[in-house]
Image 1 (cartoon, one colour):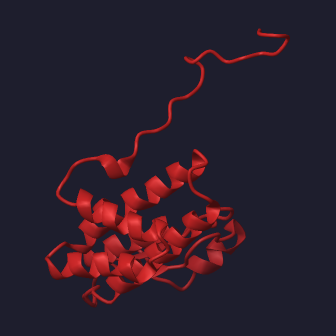
Image 2 (spheres, helix red, strand yellow):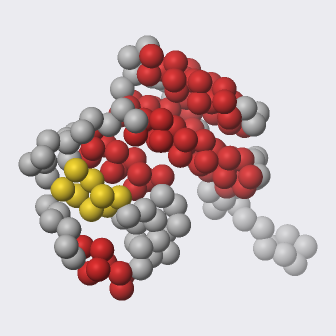
Amino acid sequence: MVCGRWTKSPRSVPAAPSSPIEQQGPFARRAQQFLLAVLEGQGEEAIEVVRTALADGVTPAQVHDSILMPAQQEVGRMWMLGEAPIADEHFASQLAGQVLSLLQARVPKPAPDAPHVVAFAVSGNLHDLGIRIIAQRLQFAGFRVTNLGADLPASDLPWALSGRQCD
């Protein structure tokens, strides 16, 4: 206690999480460019980073894992530390959704006998980027996917699955 108030020792204060954007790798520069464009409010420039990456042969899975997810994690980290407003996090999420739509146009048509998956996020989970990425990865792997999105109430699950031949 100092002057009648409790203070935390430096050891009890959690360290700021490390930035996933700072990690080295073949796509680190692209992730940094995407993030910078997001933070500068340059949505078209952020999308162009992904378009260029795809034109250079970067796969949709690599876009998911090495550009979108690190950028989203970094914006979330920055928001948590008070370095970025929630508006930046929302803008980043909206742009990530646009990138997923861009990638969706590249999903191959599944075989008629492809396994069918119904994807959804449970009630209370308002975020849909994670389930969209998972659904898209399954589609690129050849599955037929019905993505019901975020915040599916448990009471609707029997209805959502009835009449759908899912595997």
